[in-house]
Length: 396
Image (cartoon, rainbow, N blue to C red; front, side, top):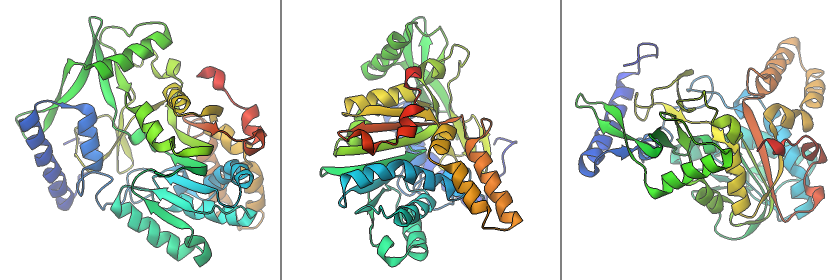
């Protein structure tokens, strides 16, 4: 047990032990488990994984706070960024949100769309977690006008039919199961998880397969330098296939991704010798992914160059790449703050100011989080000029 973290309840421990037994059985039957498989089981195992079970994840009562949980400003600005696309594509344009969280983003975005008179034909939430889907449904039904709620639709897999409109994902790609690799005498090894003999887990490295090795070599070629001996980091060899699955049916429209990460040259800095993996448990961040299986979030920063490559392979071009702070200021967060603060008391104004600071300051989410806007078969008028003008695509 990590002494720096809060102790879980007896119920939580029992839940974690169920998943631990499942993982041990898998290792006993199949041998060392690739870390990506371990992470996938810890986050998404039916009924047992972190995102599949019922404990609160988001906000003060959970393990971390996402931008939409801070208030409505983030969602209003994202809606502003994507409104021109919806307007350009007409009344049958859809909006698709990947991973709806608590439903806070959908609530604020739909109200912003309605206020601007640009309501999507359908507001679709791709949410594989049955527990989260139910929480979202209850929140939106209680908070939205009936006519707006009637446009909401939940999906458990990406749209299969061709569609047009806008797609948005906040802190989704960081939760994709990552492959951990390490260099040994010029060869690529992959990190695996084994049982430690004391009821827990430990790590070992094994020669990487062709898919993982090929992804690492591609990164080296793009960087123009090989990784040093002992260098350990993360990579998503499945990202191009995931992007195709998510975006393949979006034939005309925009896709906006916001997440914490870096361009590839910054992601794989020589001094970042142990990657970017981080875990969250009750608002504490730490680096032990083997701790409390199923009870903590496991995540890694994003290689935004890889995201751009995946978008290109799916038929999309990068329309803008910038920090979250730049995205929000370019879509009117300062004006929204000024308007709202003039209508509320001092306490509410203070809370709004704190929300803006958390979203935009460099030491908070402002620079750590990046935004990438991808476009496919839309006219220039569908993309806000303010986002095109601030793009830092040259960093990719």
